Image (tube, rainbow, N blue to C red; front, side):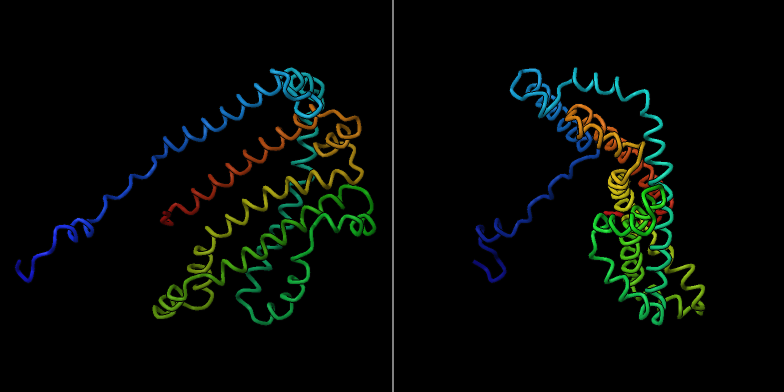
Length: 273
């Protein structure tokens, strides 16, 4: 055997394995659809087969009856929850969170002043503030919007702060080497670099805002999806509870799809794995 020869066994061990073929997008979608179909079939089997009482898991007929009862007032409830409470709260809290997080990341004096306040507020559950909000603003739309705004603020202030801090330093150094001013670096380097990360926080904040909106409507609201949940719980109408939860899930899904579409439109230049 020559000095350069390699034993057959070692050569077989060192032969690289062919790369595994990645799942295609269409296959991924089919798998997701199949999972939903399996869940629906399981639900039908449990409810139509009589294995579970309608009190614990309503069947198709129960849901149809619930939607028949809710449908006359459902458009107004959706409007009051989404347009009157959730969107204003999200815009106010999210906008303040973005501005505060970016300002803290780019300015040491601002960070020195606001960082302790944010760190004190960040661990507080928004729902724990309901008694204080009622005491300060009373029972009404202001309290409900304030609760949603606080939850959105906390999510986006942390997201925007970390997004700015995680901008690769080489981007800033390259811009400075080319003679860019601090304002130009911020506008043309930092802002485009943080947009993809901020959209991740926006998606989280939008989803959380639906939960905060429903919780806010537990504070004396006379309309909205959360108010309907209170009524359904009071009279033990499980089919109404499930029907309203399905509506909330659909609305949250549609809102998330809108945010993702906007993200793809604004950050199409960013390569993704």
